[in-house]
Amino acid sequence: MKLGIMNHPAENVFSEIKWAAENGFDFLDLTLEPPSAYVDKLNPKEIKDALAKFKLGVVGHTAYYFPIGSPIAALRDASVNEIIKCLEFFKQVGGKIVNIHPDFNQPGFFPQEDKIKFNIQSLSKIVDAAKKMGIAIMVENLNSRTYELNEFFMAIPELKFHFDLGHANLKPGECDFEKILKKFSERLVHVHFSDNKGGYNDLHIPLGTGTVEWKEAIATLKEIDYNGTLTLEVFSHDRDYLVLSKEKVKNYWLDLK
Image (tube, rainbow, N blue to C red; front, side, top):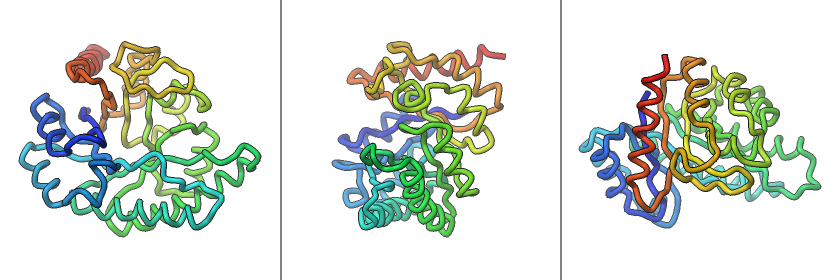
């Protein structure tokens, strides 16, 4: 298993790369988001060179607020076009897998079938564009349930799964990480860990400071023979807690037989 961190979108990406390497992480979960880390602010060659200098791998991450499920077609198309810009950037950086967040922020009076349909239309276009670049697209569980994810996977065979443990502890999604991991284990290619206290607030706090059952999640990951990349998506002001979270995961992973 390889452990990484995500760069903070408001911080200098090169400083984030240097910090990750100096503190024993294996890769950068590179999120392309404003204000400091979008495609219009960064040079892909410089990012690629920095990752090589510090011997870090890279996983691609896109902003969670792209309205790919909007009932307005022009907004969906604009989102797809922006995401394709990100894919072109990731290709130049050397990224092979990139995440997309589903969008269920439509008004409640829209039928769920329409929300799913709009997401699938956008995801299909993104997957087709990514395939030409040699990139795999993974969909992340956000405020999505097993039902919606299953619809995505049935409609798009090439689509992979990105599991976020923190999101699985929140409403209105489905708070059953064991069920969702086992259901989509064959699609699973990347994992996010962070802690929170349930409810609706995605706090991204250090492991052990909330109610997320991260030890049980590690046991489930080992049970399904997952041995890929795992990002600690922790945004603590004191980064000693991010390093401590890394040691907790490593030690517990090794302790489990």
